[in-house]
Amino acid sequence: MPTRLDIAAHFLVALFLISVLAVPGASTPVAALACFASLAAGWHHWRQDARDGFRHMSVLVVPAAIYLSLLAGQLATGAAPVSLASHILIGLLTLGAALSGVPNRVPDVRRWLLPAAAVGAICSCGLALYQVHFLDYPRPYGWLGGGPLGNGAIKFGDLAALQGLLSLVLVLTAGAVGARVLGLAGLFCGMLALALTQTRGGVLGFLLAVFVLGLSLALRHRRGSAATIGGALNGGRVIARRATARRGTAALMVAFALVLTIFAASYMQERFAQIEPQIQRYLRGDVDSEVGQRLTLWKAAARAGLHAPLAGVGFGRFSEELDRQIRTGDIAGSETLLYRQAHSEYLAAFAHAGVPGLLALLLMFLAPAYSLVRQIRVGAGSPAAYAALVSTTAFAGFALTDDMFDRQITVVAFFLLNAWLLRAALPSRAAPGLQQSRR
Image 1: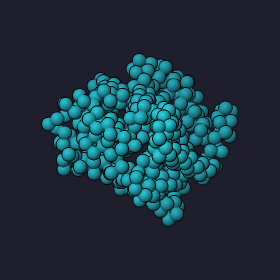
Image 2: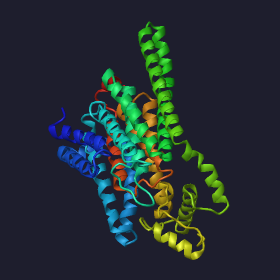
Image 3: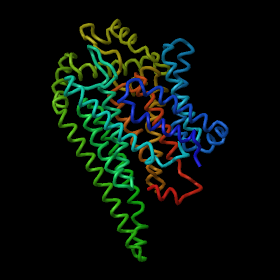
Image 4: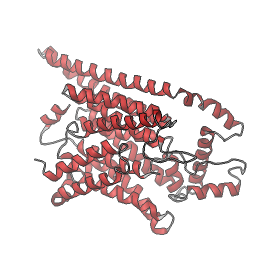
């Protein structure tokens, strides 16, 4: 039986999903309270819970520990600014909370977390609509701040898309009609918010998550088809019909999510149409465009990683590295760089920490996704496993065209949600029947 502290921790994570974009400055303190509540709830059994769940959690914990250790080493030697120490604190708190086992005390994420994500998507969409139609913002960024060269629209769009993906999982797995309707509303509102922000990388992340989830479900159904046919031959035609209905519902919802992606992409068709001519301008030597700036920065980040492949140029030192490349002539002095970040978390990790940093980051994204796909394929999936899968794959997609760890809000969201949902997805050995009922 979950204790009051267990329930409080789950409630706080749900509150995080609701308020992350809708309430200014709420994400970090709410996430911190959720972690502290989890650590307090699991304090007396933390070591045993950590041992019990480590094998399952190692796909995230081990690469995250390596990544954070690289950052800690640079902090100790002065190669990284002290302000980045908050990243280590966030990582340790969230991973410690997940290892406490508290996320697995209320393992059915349909009770709190998925409905909270849907409500959060509705709130985020309302804020975006208000800023577009009443404040005339061309790209709404909520409370994430803005300046002459950019704003928080990309982060806003990414996190709204993630809320929409978790809402999709609610539609796929909820039993009650009301919960499915709420999930549909959250999915639509998350994609509408994404479309309003015109975040192209958000569309890419959403597509990747839907594709991997759809593939996992297809593999699971394919593996179980022989058992279903055998059951039908033995008189279990009702079971076979139910399995067919579930497959049809899943396929329909994945198709609906893809239609919403097309809707979002068509809304921002101008931004997609600008890609090709901006590439042509870049090839002619003109970098004064969004694509031109990104391509220049990507090349600079790759050069930085090759310049220092073992240790990188240092976390938070990319701006100084750009100045060095300008002095050495690697970047022409005539090229005006408006931004001072790599605009790709993968290339940023390569530049900041060399090959070790890039490998650690790749494993943080890909190892949990691979493990969850295998878990779902063999029939041990659950709503929490689906939610963990769409979360980690969405972040992997977002990171292709944006620095995910340059703002605290996405650092907190990545570590908290991925760690929490992955631990909640730990299959129960004691009650295999319960796992079957969750599906």
